[in-house]
Length: 272
Image 1: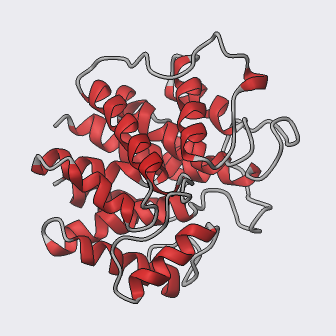
Image 2 (image 1 turned 90 degrees about the vertical axis):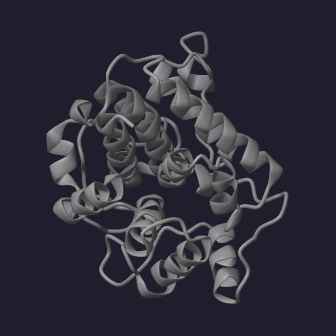
Image 3 (image 1 turned 135 degrees about the horizontal axis):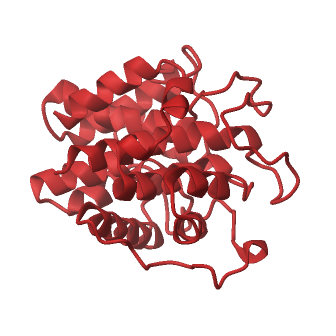
């Protein structure tokens, strides 16, 4: 696999999450327009702190590196360690910004269940952390892995279909083909969704990608939709990172991420 694209996908997720978190929960135009990493008043944190999106993706990578391969049970146990001990959280020793479905599902993992949620569990928790499981599935030639990791928290047919759609986009980008999936310039910004529903989060991220020409411009467009801006940013970052590559992500944004050297070391270990 092309390492620049792989690393771009993973770092794009982290950067997009941290970039978008300061204005999450806002209405589409009820926030300052942001063009750089800024402090997060929502959680009273400095600039560059990733949220649950980044933490859960890092947990998947951490498990794969420690175990020397794919271990669904260990991924689940690592999610438990994050939720209840703050493992790989940007906020020392404390997980934060956790959706209700994720909280319930990770609590169920601690009780032994590896399939959690209902058909109504259609939030974006699976796609916000998606690229590590996608890369493992691609590496091992086992596409079902993306559903298994998704089902840890969001065992829903709608979420699985959305994961498949995101995987198809990433497949195109890994092959050097610019996707034409999702809305483009024909959809006015005022009509672009910004909710935490997995279907709409993916549509918002694709709109930002399809209407811009650089990683930077697209991420700014994505997160300034407001709403679930950190997850829209994380999904956009994976899509755009897989197309443009790591070298297209502004270095100032990478280095603005808290503990960026630790994050980079884990990503490098995972890539290896």
